[in-house]
Image (tube, rainbow, N blue to C red; front, top):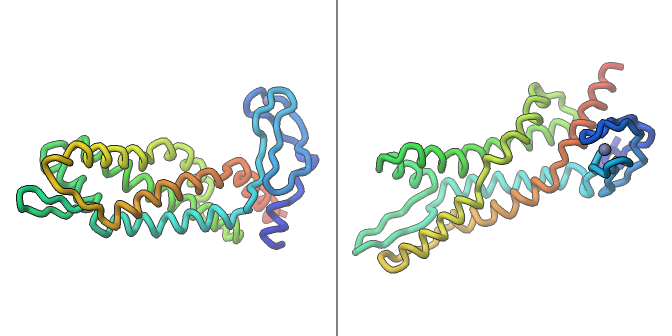
Amino acid sequence: MSESERAGEKTGGEPVACHECDALQCLPLLGRGQIARCHVCHAKLLRVPRGGLDRPIALFSAALILLLVANSLPFMTLDIQGRRAITTIFGASQALYEAGMGGLALAVFLTSIAVPALLILSSLYVLLDIRFALSLPGVRVALSWISHLQPWGMLDVFMLGVLVAFVKLGDTARMHVGVALIAYAGLIVLSAAASAAFEPGYLWRRLRRQRARRAR
Ligand SMILES: [Zn+2]
């Protein structure tokens, strides 16, 4: 079965319990981009992604490339009284640690490097497994952890901190934007688009169906 056929797969008649009000009902037949809502409380029961799984796979792959660029090239260059300092995101976290701010260094490292990397990699792992029916180990654990990890990826908060630093240090130092900063801005946009195209309810359903097919 092709990906396009699978994405518009038949949902009609499948029994499902609403996660908000527990009302038991049958899913209607859904096409791409369509949403099934609870007939009692109108909570979202299932949404079939418009672009199938190829769209989130493409967006997360592009985000992974930007994350690598953002973490390997200079983030910004600082000129203070004739001295020039070039830093990367990891370098900024390291500098905070060396300045005695261990907690802040760890927060910067986790929210701007570790969690976004883990989110992108685990999302790709789950999506590729389901898209190509690979039966990789640990997919169900990865899918359940993704929703727990999402609140801890704070790319935009880190970016806001950088912009505040730009304004505050504007009088005392000359700051030059590095390639990584532009990549980081692109990463924020791509991550938001990829998360919007990521439908956990639909992915759980696809996993259940794959498992049922294998058990037959
Ligand atoms: Zn309901």
